[in-house]
Picture 1 (cartoon, rainbow, N blue to C red):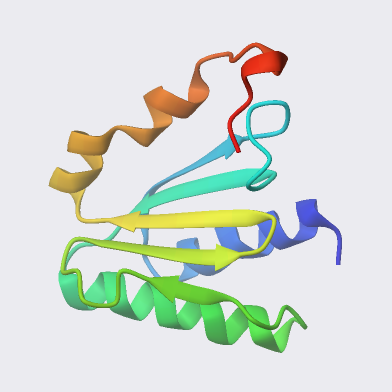
Picture 2 (cartoon, one colour; picture 1 turned 180 degrees about the vertical axis):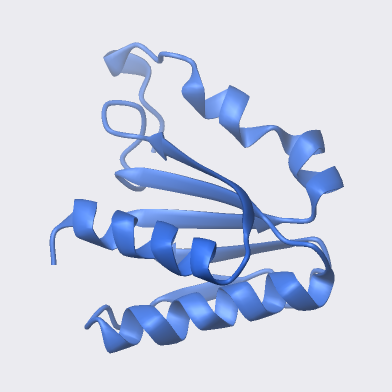
Amino acid sequence: MEVIEIKNNIERILDNNKAQNIATINLKNKSYIADYMIVASGTSSRHLQSLSEILVIELKKLGLDNCRIEGKDSNDWKLVDAHDVIIHIFHPEKRDFYDLEKMWSEEIPKEKAMI
């Protein structure tokens, strides 16, 4: 499956499961860790957990195995590693605090791309 298809499926899954404020950041030429980062908000710690678990299950159905959830013990943040797409799911206050969209939307010179 192409990376763009994976990204589109993740956005659809998040939207269908009532994730809020879904934002996609293109990381190409900014980082070697992934091609895209998707940031979304959940309404409660239970919603964050459900969204992360649903993503892993649905991606596995699409043939994307070995996706991992980080932050299982956190009540306000989850990360799903879908290989070339990284998904951060935050409680709204934590999302505002970390402001990943602003950090990753700035242009980074190619020679300073982070690993």
